[in-house]
Image 1 (cartoon, one colour):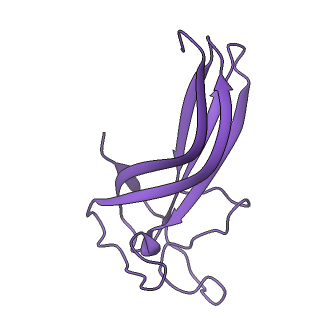
Image 2 (cartoon, rainbow, N blue to C red):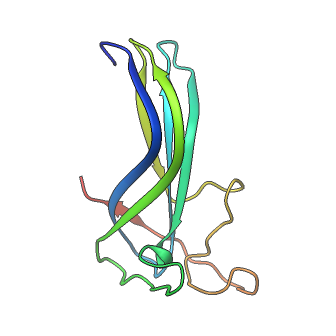
Length: 124
């Protein structure tokens, strides 16, 4: 809980160190303002497809179980988090239907016929 007002203005990024059981998966992040009454206001969000973590031009699949650094661009925001509010960062592997689903196989989503579950983990 914030003990005083906190202004957040400008670009927002999240760095995540994570691994997956799949060769490709997504990581999503949301910045949320949570009021004392529990109301959660989504402020900004972003996504990264694991195979594009280093380059949009040269995709590289994951080695399952290996830890990688992911930088998620949550775009920009300007918000005053009021005293008594909480700043929450939500991390997930999906935000469907907001963003396209990832079948976690590395195949082209338009023609792929199968999907596999991805067990994702992060370093604390």
